[in-house]
Image 1 (cartoon, rainbow, N blue to C red):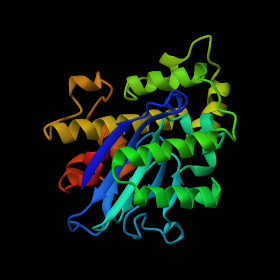
Image 2 (image 1 turned 120 degrees about the vertical axis):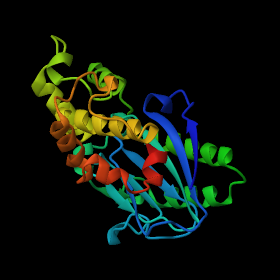
Image 3 (image 1 turned 90 degrees about the vertical axis):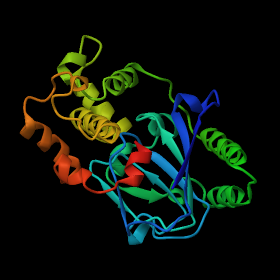
Image 4 (image 1 turned 45 degrees about the vertical axis):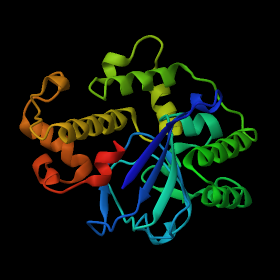
Length: 267
C-alpha cells in the first residue's frame, strides 16, 4: 500500500479541507479485509484504478462515495490495482462548503453522483484515470470542487467551528464542561453538531481519543493508560479498555495482535 498526502492549498477550499490523500494497492493483499478506525471527519473518495468491492457493501460497489462520520471500525476490501483519491474534510468542512447535513450520513455513505451531477463525477473520474501524475489529479479535483462550490453558498468559519478545532488540538482529552463558556450554549452546540458534524459532541470527543490512542500504540506498542500524554484522563485499565472497545469491539492487546496496515497509514 502506497499513500500520498497533498495539502489543500486553494484559498477557498483550504477553509474546509485539510488534505487530499491518494492510496494505491499494488501488492497482493495480506488479508481479505482491512479494519479501519473512525477518523473524525467526513471524506469523499473517487476510484480511478481497478473496479473492486472495496467498501464491502453491495449498495456501495461504486466508483465514488461521500462518507460521513463513522463511530466504529470498518472492514474494507482493497485488491491489487485499487487506486483512490480522497478528500479529507475538516470535521465541519463538508457542511460548510456544500450545506450537506451530516446527521444523514452518520455511519453510512452515498454514491457521489447522488450528491454531485453524475456527468461531472464521471468526467472527473475519467480525468483522474488519464492524468499523467498525482499533481495533475489534484488539479482536476480542485477544479471540480471549485465548480461545485460555485453552486452552493459556502459558510464562513464560526465560533462553534473554533470549538471543534480546540477539541482536535486536545485529541479529545478534554471534558465538554471545560470547553463551554458564555459564548457557547449547550443546546445550540448540540444542534450544531447534529448538522455540521453528524454525531454528538460527547461522541466526537470519544472518537478523537480513540484515534489518538491508536496513533500512540502504533508508535509505541508499550503504550498504556498511564502514559503522560493521556494527561490522567483514564482512572484504571478497565476504563481504558471500555473506551477502546467501544469503537473496535476488542481490547487493545487483542486488536494489536493483528497487522492493521491500512489503519496505521490512515490515522
